Length: 332
Image (cartoon, rainbow, N blue to C red; front, top):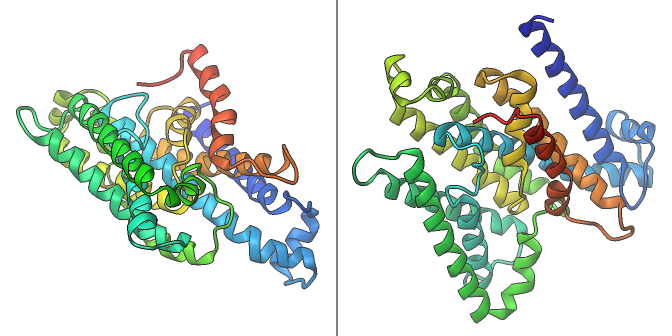
């Protein structure tokens, strides 16, 4: 099968998988709802108890899952591209931990106790952490090289972990509330959160799509990228800014959900190749699939309790990455 045809086929399959994941997310839970009832609630405005559950509780949760899954997957793809590090994920620049500091500060010192209030503090914390990492990496000779970005991110991440721990040990009352956010979940989110984060997600998507060609050139090496007319510094700055906006918004809305930003880019490359004009859209489709399926499985494994999506993404995602490593298709 020719490459363009194959890519079109797998993209279509990914779209179908996403639609099925959305239906699963709307149908599965403490109360199982038949797919026909879900469609009736969405298309015909049914007024049964099941229809109210779908519209008032599961639709906002599913929309958040779509947005956060796409955001983290796109951010991971771009970060792996600009750092040329196959194990990079949204935590590599300290973004997730920056968001954590923002949330724990809001709880402990600003008296913020609602999810819609956490969003802004988490986003600011993520942005400041990313700026600090880039400022460290850009100083000195050579500018913001992949190694300096990784080392700067590790240093800032360690510092922010210490700050978070210090606040929690001196403000014990904040521990339980912060722990609920820190575990990573899309449960309990409402349409107000969707309204707060979608503009940032739109800006982030535009920024990362703008550097798709630059990421392809950068994968060949900095010298080759410059020879092809790419401004390497601009690609890294624009791509890093896009990844920061996407990660900040995603983590602010759902907490630091692990593994999507690490695993999904490799899965996307395995099925569509290394061209980022295809990898980025595929990652945007597969990220929500992984998150929504993980969330749905977490609702049914130990009923009536739920396992948070952040736990399930790792349990479901690890076998995918192990299989890819064994097949030697994980791209650098």
